[in-house]
Each structure stands twice: as C-alpha cells, then as structure tokens.
Amino acid sequence: MIADRPLTWYVPLERAAKGIVVTQFEMRAIEAVGLVKMDLLGNRALSTIGECVSLAGARGAVVDVETIPDPDPATARRLAAGDTLNCFQLESPAMRHLLRMLKAGTLEETIAAVALVRPGPAESGMKEAFCRRHRGSRAVDLPAPSAAAGAGVDPRRDALRGRRDAGRRGARGPPAARG
Image 1 (cartoon, one colour):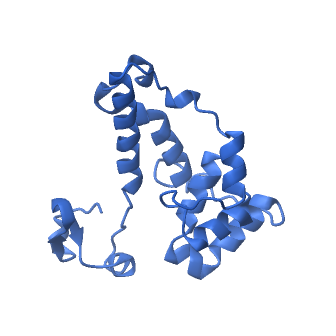
Image 2 (image 1 turned 30 degrees about the vertical axis):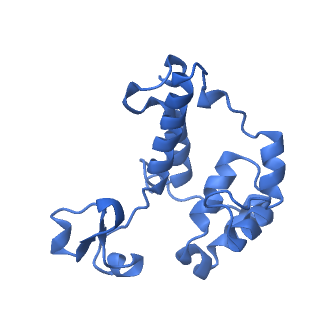
Image 3 (image 1 turned 135 degrees about the horizontal axis):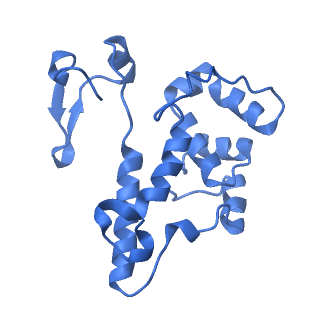
C-alpha cells in the first residue's frame, strides 16, 4: 500500500511471518478507507527468476529469459488444457477452469488469468466478461486514453515489463541476463 502519510494513520499493522509488515484489514476494508492494496507477489517471483538465472550462471550455464519462447508449444497445450497441478498460482480448480475457458497459451493470457482469479473479479462477473471478449464473442469497450495512461493501469503490461527486467536485478547474473 502507498499512502500520503504513515499507514498506521489509516490501518492497524502487524508483523507477519519472516518479519514482513502487513495490514490487519482485508482488501475491501482497505478500499473503504481510501487506500489501494497492491499484490507484490509478482515482484518476489521476478526476484526468484533473477536468482535462478544467477545460480545457473554460477554453474556456467547462460540463461536469457528473453529467449524463452512465448508461447512455448508444450507449455501452451498444458495451460489451455488446465493441466497445471503443482504450478504455483495455477493449480486451484478455479484457476484451471479459467485457463480452459480462456484457452490460455501465452504468458500474457496466464497473467490475465492470475489477475482475474480474485474475489472482486470473480464475484462481479468480470471473469466471464473477460473470457467472452478474449474469445471475440463480445465487443471490447476501450477506456478513454487518459484513463489508460501510465503504469499500474494494465497489470498485464506491467508484468510483461517486469518479465523483461527479471534477470537485471542488481546487475547480478551472467551478462546475457542483464540489459
């Protein structure tokens, strides 16, 4: 969360596992006090990818995340079939069903699915509407250009930008992974 003053002005905080400070309010209560709660789990995943690239480099392997094909045919088939058991964030029954509905096969489609399997989109019908638009059975209503300007408006675009930068954290890892 980002606020114009210390978060304790708005919400109670506590120290959770591994010393991470978290709010004691859930998402809707956070929104009710005028704040936006952001999920930074993706940032940790990008850090993990960067660490894997570094570890591979330390063993002499050169890994360039930019050269991993998207879509990778074998991965695309498994995603579209919802065959994602034991895949972090993709293994719940709801997620597997959504991947099948989307016929997801690319990173962008997978990112969209992860963003949609949340209480808000699930309860409001946004998942189904997104799938209909994605399949072309419903027209896409574009927002005003001013509403779509800037980072943070399109989490899929921001995640793809993060993927591009995943191997560049702190300029660690083999040169091929750095920009």
